[in-house]
Image (cartoon, rainbow, N blue to C red; front, side):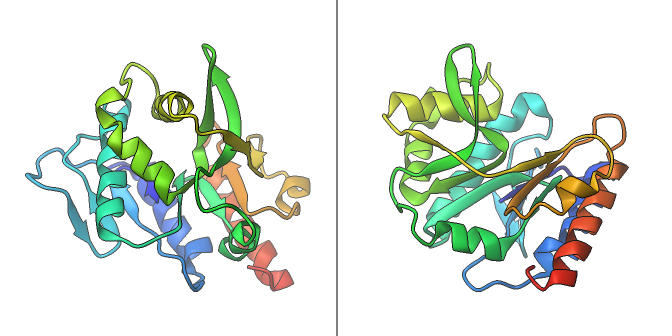
Length: 217
């Protein structure tokens, strides 16, 4: 599941880059859903691979957008795991598939772990949720703390339901096109340059080129 925003130039270009790079690779067992806020729908609508919630876009509505998206996916798709990520992340689907081969299919929440005001959470930049964990989040949607950012809110729910968080693999590229990091092999890269998001696009293209050249995309 890839989080994005419509009618926003940089996010639309990031999604286009995702489609042209890592998500252009077809890997058996994977399906990508891009989810958006909409605001004026009466119901959640899936058009192709784009899921439009009834929630407006914007950080203050992000929790509602995530809840609706997880609820829809749970009700309409068969899956073992959801990889919940944003559109400035690069995912190597084959490497993620290998990573998950021997992982538990229950009570599995994996990502880069942070702590906010004593609440442990997996970073919203990219986290793996087993199906039962998604069920737990949806079941507890009325307990969602909308005063917190969405990944911390999820962490709060999971900790209360005795679901442990597992540290995952990620390479974070935040300062320019760092070739030493690009050539590090990992299933997940977080690309976020605060001053110039166009650099993120260049990084994802360079990552794709690198993986294509070594035949491991």
